[in-house]
Length: 578
Ligand SMILES: [Zn+2]
Image (cartoon, rainbow, N blue to C red):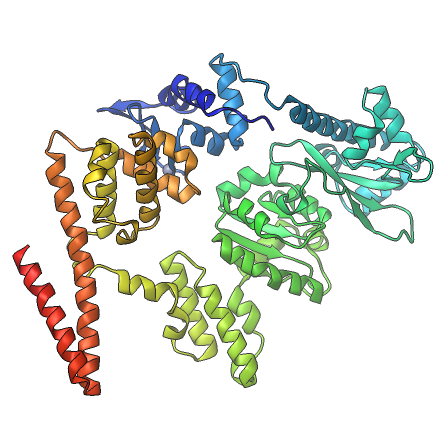
């Protein structure tokens, strides 16, 4: 992939006006300094989506999404950063340097080889040697329609050692390119190339933008060693990052907010064909953390619909942690014994699936519901309780965590506090003891001061450290602001959004940038905020000292108690004098 120099990205940022670009997707109305419209990322009737021409950012007060012109296009069009840059450069007539054109053209070659292979496999479906057999298999046995077969570009690799190589050569693709694309194999002995896939049903695997990057091949010959054979990993196919069908299903997954995860291609195809389109398939790997992250871009809930056998059960249990880590709530669908999603949907239809989904189980009920926790032995109890506790600690959403914890307490008979520790405890000790106004908002206002007038940050950075801000992402944003200011003398949120690590940070940053300060004395304001944070820090310290003091008294440690008492007195005096 071409490396685009920072200066070019700046040039594009200057050229691509955010109001103009977003205005091309939805109607925007001017309201004061900003523009408003209906948010394209969530359903709403009153506009809470705001675009700031001054700051070149957007933010939705309804769903919290926010960013700059690049993040808008990436999110809305599901483009990568490079794709976004390329499309804007084209639109605004900016010429990008051809830095790494060799690597670029190599990727393009591999993509092209896969595309041509898909074409060849599809054409071969009508080969009279296989036509009848394939029709029986796909249409009758698997119950696919011709429309589905066409849409998913299903084909067949004929029983031919060089069929693809000959076809590809006629399209100017060299055998070496086919080999690098995982479609041909070179013989060590003779140095000759031959087709990797022979006499297999070929299912193209697409990337998220819908380009063929690999194949899954199902054996058609009885007694073939490997029932499924997939393309090997190539520069364009990293199987742990890919979920089958995401390019077709992503819109439905996003609008449902949930995904049905299945294990195989045919599970996917049957569900999709039945009109259940928020589905994706793992196929060929065990579920990876990267796949969970991919899903987290579209969904907050996943229904794991695996085979009703022990392999399916353990696959479901293994994937749970990845879901928790990615912030997705996993639920487990339990089909009747002996069935799989493919056979189930063909038997019971969409109504049957919907009923199964309604009866899906949360992780705890699935894992512990069927047997009695109290009947476990001590070691099993201990390790299960620890496992649940660690999962609880991974749930960011406080309400969701609370529900999980009380369910865990019910199931195990252990006190909820046991599962609460870790994350929740940190939160309570960090919580300001003076909750007059929401400290979260105060922190955001504080950060927004530096967007409005960057040099103010110099007046506080010696007293207020990133650790003093407790709101989500606030410390990280503050520290990034300091870093950027030290390096450039500026704090430009539009530019910073590209360097922040994740969506939550860029959304928080975008929100912070929307806060407006009128014509008031900002240096006075910043002093007030500084004092608020210093007070909070001191109160926290005071609370700690007071509890240590009580403890020392109880233990009869007079000397320690006396020392603590002096320190407490000093802090209180100072507080009164401030
Ligand atoms: Zn929104």
